[in-house]
Image (cartoon, rainbow, N blue to C red; front, side, top):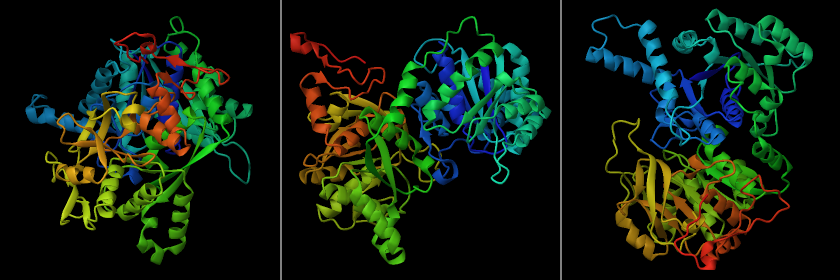
Length: 594
């Protein structure tokens, strides 16, 4: 196994995750198989109990792992399916070591950070690196490891020591270290400063790790004399000093690395030049250029609880981007704090209240994402009501689906106190209830998590058509409350239809309002499986409905002709691609294949 380690220095938030993902993209474009590992030095076992304000969104994997959002970047960039073990935390490592100690596996020895914790880290990395994540058999060629945090942090010291030992044990031909650092420019002087990076590299070398490449983050391209100074004082060849300056969109980052021959330096260090091909990034280049050249946009109202930090809804934002590009549009996301829509806000912060409602009324579609807790719920209910009554396309995800049920029960059924047990445990009309198998005492890993199957109850629904008339769909979940099965009958009698259920038929997964142009709620999180070039069906449906193209799109599917709406970036825009279903020519038992 070949390892590429990505570390960070000077400050956090430099984009190590995007850099690591982009390195993986370039290596994959060279014909190599790539897997990824993210190391988070915090004591939490996983990201499941962390606030979005603390660490951004919690990304959910197929196996139910609640992991750092960087694993979402890896999956989207590399088009792989990772496991919960691809995210290593201090909590997981110490938990595994302490479990062994309690069982007596250390045979009476004194358990210490070195060698027991460091050995556990090395063993974890080496065992996870060989797990195939691309659907093929056998291990990958290269494992890209991102070490979270900043070099010098106390909490990351055991990991750095373990990685130092790993680099020595696997040998220099199997280990490549890329250090991501910041090159600031002081406003008064206007000079690119290298001293912070020099100190960061010096500290890294003092810990026993020497970078083979420097990935320098900056607002503008690095000057030649800046590179020369970095090379001289950081002991890195000038050809291995990469500049990742600000770009219009992150899809340019792999192209930046390719253009600076980063792949050649990495392959040379890993002794892979003889088996790797020149990087083929044509589709990636087309995707980046397509986005840059888009002129028209669609306004999307994102009504949520954590709108103060965009990373709280990172996968939702990326899924909207994928869907908009498929429709040749740029997403224009209007962030609305749900609490600003509430009546109480009109008294306390009238300007914010008025601005929130003006933004909502100007939007072409409304999206209410997931969340926990009762803050802002009243505003979300008002947003769902506005979208329902004014025929504005609406997509509710997880909590957003439950919100639409509560709003419908209150406004249409006249159940003024209808609510979720999460927000009002004494409600006389609990249309959303706590799941029977959930835990009320432990928060971590006690929700309904991971990929679950949803069966469509009828082919004659918008959602089924968007999923290419599938009988079922497998999507990822993260929730501990669900629609009350006892309320389904009265809700459906009033017009709300539950068109998707789990395999037992008792758990509601998808709802639609047939009388509405596009009013869809889903209990799962479709954003987690959206990919560049393969947008989520539901996000695509939302954007098509917002731009009045949904009916035409669905009709082409129903009539045996599929319109791709530029879903394949490799098809020139001047071409029209028409695919005819074999059933038109008398062939039976035929299905669409990707």
